[in-house]
Length: 297
Image (tube, rainbow, N blue to C red; front, side):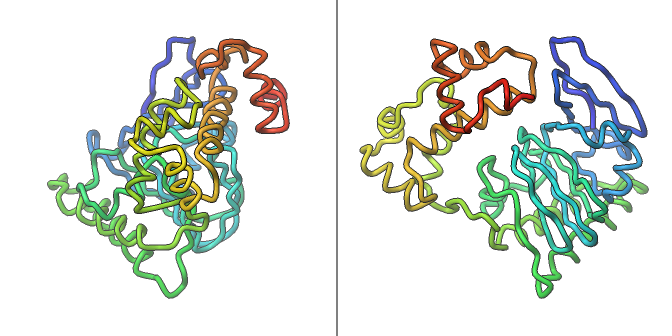
């Protein structure tokens, strides 16, 4: 992992192939393989990663520009992803997509970690929902589904071989693709809509425009549906209206900025499209039950 540079003054920590840049209150990591330079994949035990990091760094909230898979094989831990705590035990599988806010597992859990850049896996239609920024974070690998565990172990063995031999990465790409396909067919523990192209179109537009407009009718027009049809699609997919999903996305970004930056509440509100700081404060308090300042603390 290597630094994502910031305009603000950065505090840099280096250790065992890891360079971290802390910007504001959260660390940012870019991908660099410590074993083989430009390789866009690393398979590492959580215990090894822990030895690379200081105790202080282990507790820091951070975000990355690469994908992270955690397959817990023993022990217990809690992992925070986008301000939701995920209790983890043997069989828990977490996927943290680029940009999500993460705190590494806190506890005695043992886990495989598979880290990879968005460009490294082979392009497969079956893995697209899994790798989507809207995909579910948590899945459970049943004891009967040991093919996933075997796929991770095989990927780790080939990774170690590749580091030593410096061979072409074709087999690594295919093994990662096979692993992702196996994971994609596991049921999600909290299953948002997957496979609905209409809802996915709305999600993509929301990701582009949440800081520009919170008007559900505008989103409906942009994706080519009536507001009634869009609400029906969203309700079928998630049980929530389009407006509720729009507001939830704005709140998530506000939380990320409150933790991730030193921007004032007024500046964050302006960045998210609020013309007045008081309007942002009222909106955030209504949606979360606390003020922006209280949440940051």
